Image (cartoon, rainbow, N blue to C red):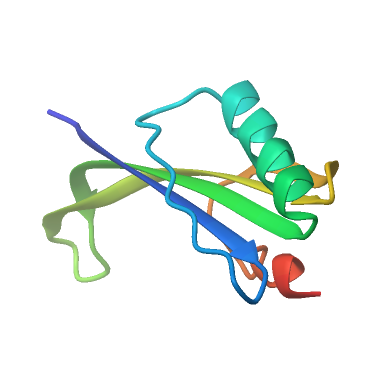
Length: 102
């Protein structure tokens, strides 16, 4: 039996902006458009990332098994002043979010 957990995070790189994003399990296209819209509206760099984790029985190094993350799908969107700089899926963050701070 698999369980699924989804996290959506929104960040805006601006000194006086605080924005919350209330989109549960939104498709990629909506996240890209929302990120583009926020970056255009605030005239700054914005990032939206969705981390979707699938939990199930995973095998551990000692030959046993445990309930944990068996698959991960990360989607990251970075926009600046209305232009999409990055929109891609990965199987883990691997420092991709650092792109946002450049």
